[in-house]
Length: 86
Image (cartoon, rainbow, N blue to C red; front, side):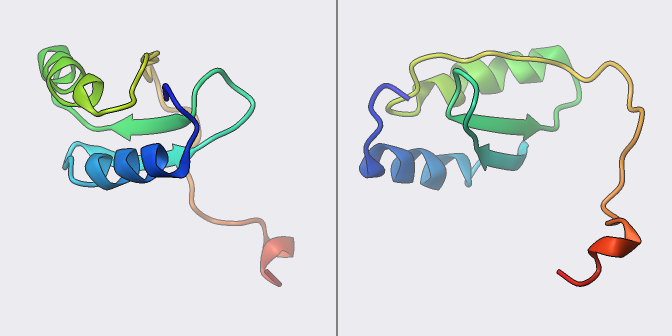
């Protein structure tokens, strides 16, 4: 984000929530990014369209870094048994 002010974050979150391709959005720390998105698209052409036509047009977005899943190794939503007290 170009400015770290509540209004900028709120506007980004409001707009990104309207994109059906965005299936996860996290506010993160510890990286040179403010948000991490998980986007589901059928192909790279659609990703390109979303990136340039939607995401980079959101007010305050000053840069984007992309990474792509090559192969799924582990995917679970189950917590270990000793976490059930949470």
